[in-house]
Image (cartoon, protein in one colour):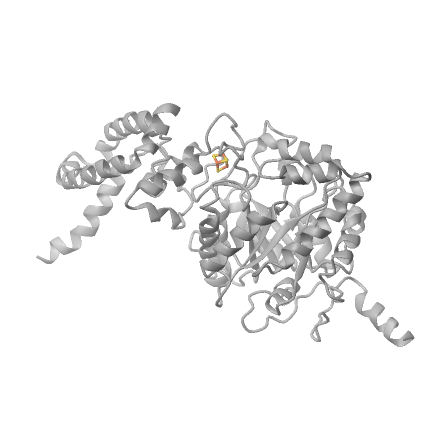
Length: 157
Length: 342
Ligand code: SF4
């Protein structure tokens, strides 16, 4: 919802803290995900993720979440689905070129990033969306990546 | 500026050390000359002569011509088509590629095709939304954005690979451009966004229409402070300018064209003039002269939509070429003739 998502961006620092606490928890659950099977966990987790992030951020389930680099303003709500910053068409009042009734997603992102600890991540060039990940859980992907990074060390022991 | 190694029209110049492209625009910019570019109005026609005629208007006044890619989301002859016609005559083209209409497969193919035809400059744009043009019912693609497009084009040139990682045999030798709009919010982000574009591969920038010199000055100072105008990866900045036809059309543009910011003072100046069109051109000349004085500016990009015939006069009166005659088909023969007569 538009109002919720704008409220979230105003409190981006808080949401950053929540996510930073949440990520290690689900990452630690890696053995559980593995026992269930990542593929089998995918459906239910994606449903939860869609509900939560949909409510808070108007998340579009691109499957490769960029919120921590975009001031908690979901870039997929930009009508041009830009991943790297505003287009040149932002209106003088900060509203969107395509949807004049909406604040530019990237003007919001900039404001949100200014409150965040990892605010400078907005300056890093993001890769284009991998369309194969659409509608899949970004959380599980991140967890898996963390687990895979950890795994080689585990094997050495 | 006459290059001793001027090639047969349609062929590239030798690529000098420190250069990436075989084009004239990069040469002029790296030589520290004040560069001038303009934009061809692509015809709604399949007639090649229309293209040649529209390019010839700029003969002797511009270092490169932009071929727009469905600008304003309106349908016209494609930028690839315009470029393929004009590069054969030897014109230096800036091929615009917008992310609105094609996905990464089509765009990468276009980069190779353009470079093979002699395009030495590619301008990576996000593109206007489809709502702005004559086909608002079209599907907006935006598979890439201007930044990821820059990165992909650079990797094709420097790492000889597609985005997929698959290798290229001969890379596209292109000088990479991007757009910036210092006149749209969020203002404090704009210089950083430019830095991000430079990090993604941008080597020259053409800005949105500038009618607000104080804002441009602030922007340029920030860009200088970020160190973007120094070193081997420096960026060349060419602010956009253009003549306004009247106070009425300026007001219309301000309200309807996304991203164009026209201050009240400009509209007042036009409204107060007896001949508004002439005043619009005069204003454009004044802007060019003021822009040229700003530290770090490398040239201007003149966009004279529907007033293309005024470009020569505007550039001439502004004096920015300082007697330089940019290449055009037949220029060297002409200069030789003049020298012999003298
Ligand atoms: S104005 Fe902002 S939200 Fe609208 S298309 Fe441009 S970048 Fe996206």
